[in-house]
Image 1: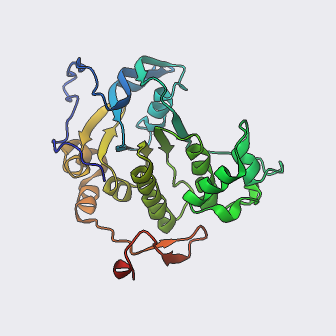
Image 2: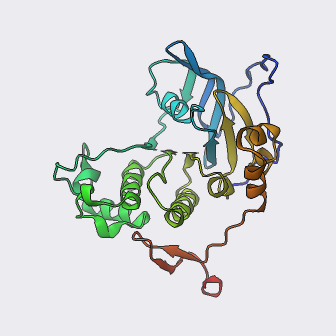
Length: 282
């Protein structure tokens, strides 16, 4: 896991209605994408207010918050997909973003296999397709109809499509949606491994606090605004985190450990983890 500065979780507001001033310092050279004063209003209601966020090269940032907190809205605003957004969003010149959306609808009446899906709009060599599917543990579904994929298989195929862009920043909005708990833990472990191997940054949105936070370098908790941010352990002990998720959630994260001495194939069956030394495998 990437080393990050050991600083306490910060909180950008108080509950008396005042708000700290936006930072004026320029982002570090490692910044890939940064936003200042990002706000979204729809139908007279504020969905996001004054969000300041910076995503740095090589780090995994987890975005958490209760249902309706504006997590997906923030992702869409950062990607330039939210027409009602105000404020500023800046990207490093030449930045390539791979995006795995929260929902991907498949028209089951259209005959479309995985190979064709991965090449839509692009001319991609067959060897690159197979390599991308191998990277996500889904090579065996290359000729499978997309409509026939399980939830876990589909998520891995969509991830492979994002990886084919050779991204500097990988953005994943609830990537484990429709995946069981074993598959979810393996999917997040896969994302962490790919980050280590390829060096891209990851912005990850999820509701599964203990698994996701355990693999993050930095956590940003939002509820229409940034409530607190920092290292996972400091965020989990922050009063804002406890207020939003309750004491049980904070305690669960504090005692959570996960030693996974095996992996699961795309169908969910346990297999030896080739990344572990022989003596560390079950």
